[in-house]
Image 1 (cartoon, rainbow, N blue to C red):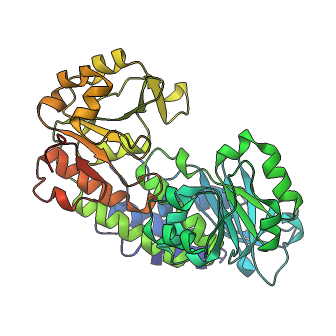
Image 2: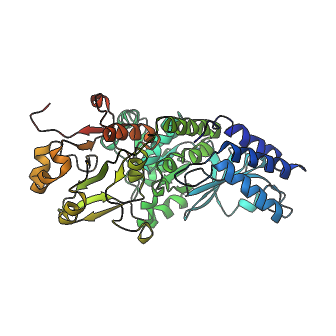
Image 3: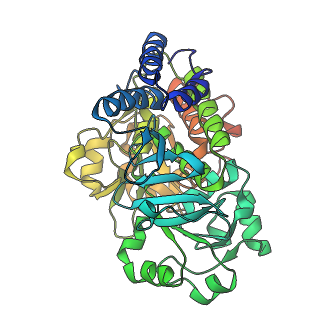
Length: 425
């Protein structure tokens, strides 16, 4: 990416301010040309930025008589539709008077209004969320990091995750102290506690669809339920870009934009200029004797690719054959596919019982025949990557150090630690 990140927010504001004016299409065309000249585009994904996409949308909709402008049927003035740069699972419509509509794939549309406003008539059939959202029941643990990044942990009153299961130190402490209360699992929360704490919003992930009665009961209590899908993003920055959704809910869109753009700049500045020719696999051993591996096209394999490595299991399953981010395979198949991989990364946050090479080979002696074992290049991750979506840039930096061999400071790594023999401290 180029150095054109600085004017992005300014350009977006200019588009919003001018979209309804009589000279809107001229300004939009000029803005589009400026963005193209700057080359604001991800060279690997082939996607333009949200600004480029939004400009195209303005042009298309202007000729069709839609998009920004006043809808004569309801009197609402639509300012713009924000299309993310990397995420594919959401978009946000902005209207006059501070109304926003968050559109989430397969979850629906949610109208966000200020606390002192009611939803306009055209939005009455949508789920209404008051902004800034407060006294939240957060049943999607991967979303908590967005609240931390926006300095809004105080907006979360209840959680479905116990203190011992949090990898975020700040959150762990808040749950232990009772500032954030454990309210039961997503599938069977303490409904009386939700009412007692005057919960204003429940945020779930798609696991709630396995227990739809829980979602229905929460809604019957008058609590809006938003089902988020950040874990369905295949690009690591796509997961992180969900901070824009939470910025909208919390009245911190500018802060969310600024945070995201800063992390993108950081990643681009540190991004390797060459491929290292190192292959890697991310896995753990299940209780049933299978090997659980991350799928090609998943955000973990995406981080490996962005760090200059190659995911060794590319081709395991075509990306259009299923939406699973991980799959179980037999040890025999894993041996065939990953024996010659340069790097193995063991997911210790799922199975924390394997911390040494002896413990790994005790599970299956075949591991001693792997290239990564012989070359001392088996690593494990201890901090929950799933819970720390906003730290993708740091994860990628550590992975790049592993692939480049520049691991002199590996003791300072936060996410990845070399797996060693028991007697090697």
